[in-house]
Image 1 (tube, rainbow, N blue to C red):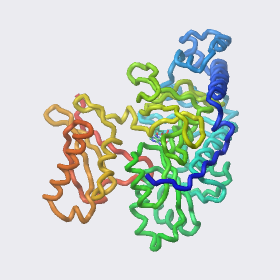
Image 2 (image 1 turned 90 degrees about the vertical axis):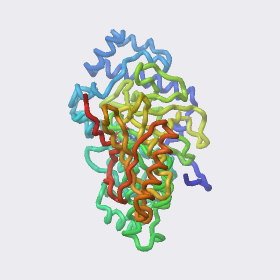
Image 3 (image 1 turned 180 degrees about the vertical axis):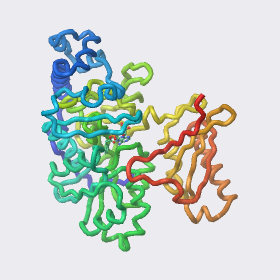
Image 4 (image 1 turned 180 degrees about the horizontal axis):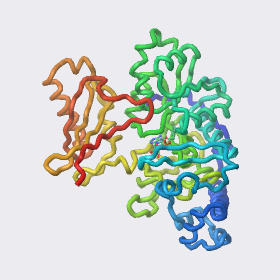
Length: 446
Ligand code: DLL
């Protein structure tokens, strides 16, 4: 990871970002009650849910004295949003909305997110906090290569940059040659896109830019998919920038739920807007600080679509010790993966990010991999496909044998599972302009 020597801490909304912790908890409790009252009155789905949880009358909400009482409230799952498609989860009539976004979801039916004018303003300010925390300001020029459209990445960054007063180039994803032309001609200083696309730009930069000293790029904010610190290192080296992580999801506005500050020691959760909990995904029990589990988020400052205890399916852990940047917001570790993407082989839980940290650690491998799951003799097995760099690949079969055995051994050392490793020529695996798919599931379903 790049070492920030001249560290300068910036805030966009210092009052909230550095709020005293007890004061923050009081604010959260007040906002939680207000949110509950809103959904109780304005949303039938939540009214029923809260009734079932023993909140029969709006005045029962006043029994909540402490933010920890949230553990007695019911969860909201993705399937609840799917079942209430398209607008059943909204707590405002459509006439109050000014925008929707959608995520394709994993189950086929999209999830619709709705925004009032105030929601867009709040979200823009949260995004401005993110940009500021990475050390960006009015003098920067941001190139936005997140997809514009129903995906929240494009417009989320766009509005955040405008709220900050930073010039933004609305590129959207793709058109790689044009990305480099604009980067050079406009003097882009900050790049926003998925880590996968940043990695691809890093692989291609020398093809399009004759003199990289003309490139002014110094920072990038990347998210929307899991990426390991080894992945970060790779982007930082190939693009010669300082890379920051940002987390968010369409169901909770979009990007801007959590972000890294210049110390890059975990992601600060915008806690005045989102109340985080970590639960055991199997039992639903709330876990203690530091224990890894599923992130659950409650929106605390939202009009169109407040969500109570939304199960994100993302695996991480929280820690509260104060960050050197002065923000009081709790931090979460980089997302390890989604419960959906967790591979269970021989009873061992494996996340693609673990395999990734191994592959990206080799300097003679291309930063690319695919995990293939297959069935052999009724047993589920894993084949990790890797790409040795051209000069290594040219060394022939016995060298490939040596490399694949070595990677397989490293995987065994880290996760205790023997896996097949297959080497393919460089640039064989698909590169993504958005989120990468890391698993190909060929298992026979019984
Ligand atoms: O990916 C929002 C976003 C846009 C975040 C741009 C950051 C930057 P969805 O398409 O709804 O929204 O996908 C949300 O993506 O539940 C995580 O599984 C994953 N995800 C998002 N950010 C990160 C991250 C956007 N920094 C889902 N690390 C989430 C790991 C992430 N996973």
